[in-house]
Image 1 (cartoon, rainbow, N blue to C red):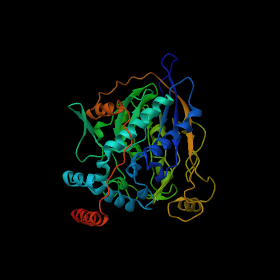
Image 2: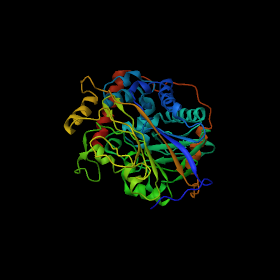
Image 3: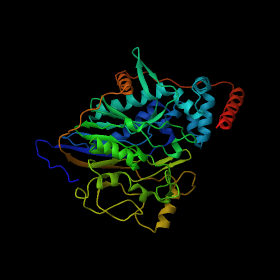
Length: 428
């Protein structure tokens, strides 16, 4: 499908910015640490904000997940995700146990749901304040969040449900829309952080001065059902917040074909780059990727802004792939030369617990591109009950900082926790 001819009267001209930050567990031990980490990303963007046109800043996937560590510096230094989760479970048993038993969810999901009120408010208020202060349209990245609704003027959550969710705000900090991730990776499923997949029919497109925005969180942007649904609704700008939880130059194989093992950068060409170079309505895609070692988990990648081949004729591509058109902007990997085996070795050196001098020496970056689109022909979708509840939370004043969790006698808690975990695993 050829691009729609633009006239100066119709054109929407705007700047998109993709932030590639580096995270660590210490960024999430307190509300102040989290706000500082999020602000640092907008400060990276500040010198590149367009002085006249609207700006869209896109942050990374699961950038609110480690808020489960808030108030627990000991857990942040636990060394592994499993040990951190156990310490958190022990310290917060009085709040977690009722959720675990009443809603019949896993310990890790109960841990996240028990802290939803404080962490969801902190996340939303931080993003709202940043959108207002920097005057940008903000794709907040994504975070685990329950599905909410308003009951008698109060925000309540749906029992047991926790999705990987993106929120988009305007420069006044008002809600544009929210989207759940549909296709979860194994690390997001029951044996990992235990999230709930979002329903495909709920994916919608949001018309704005910075494009008709559709969200494909990480793996969703690889999937034809997601891209097809967004294109059927007239999506022109695909937002792909990402957190790739392994060495960038490692081999991968994911559902639905885990036997199809290839270099990750080769697989990544099937997401944003394919959506813009071979798609229909999607003209541009923004794919920011977080890097850094979080406890024993490693995250790496190359952030990118992609478009049609005629929009980006210069040849470039991810490491371990051949140069090609379609990349408007691309973050270099930590090393651009070397044999495939050498580059794969470097990816392992960067990873958590490698013991190599280059461990955790990832590259942060920021990408931007000026884009032009015709006037939108997309109608704003109706608000969902969940979005009305998000609006209510965004309208609140920021609450005072509180400490989550209560310690019980360790011997008692350890025995109860071990029993509960053993029973849960046996039931599965």
